[in-house]
Length: 141
Image (tube, rainbow, N blue to C red; front, side, top):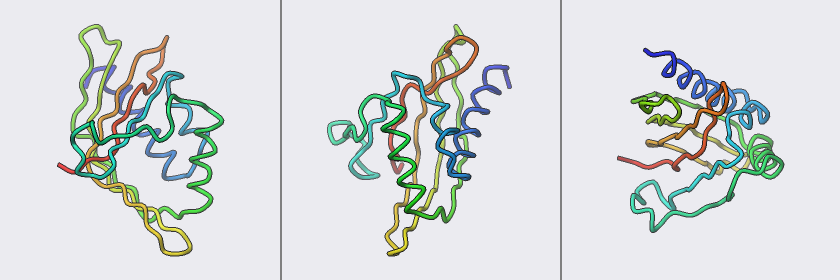
């Protein structure tokens, strides 16, 4: 693995740890200030015409509250993530990662939020660190 691939793997692992430990500050640390996170309406909505922006552009306070509400109201049953592919630009200033995830949240009413499928995480090199600029919602392939 190249130095950049190791750095990208670290940020993916850091995100996984943030979900596993329900650490909002650790999760927020990976996002670029211009981050946007489109989300498909269903796991089979491959056509972006069916996607939506639930949160808009990254806003630390707003996004922290959304994730803290999730952590306060849902228990993490499992969080399985497997990196399938890392691609770094020739100039080593951009990258994307394909990750298969299976993350299950359950609340006290037994309502489930199951994130299962494939995602694409997009990163930009900002100074000496990588920041996530875009992330697709979970899709089944």
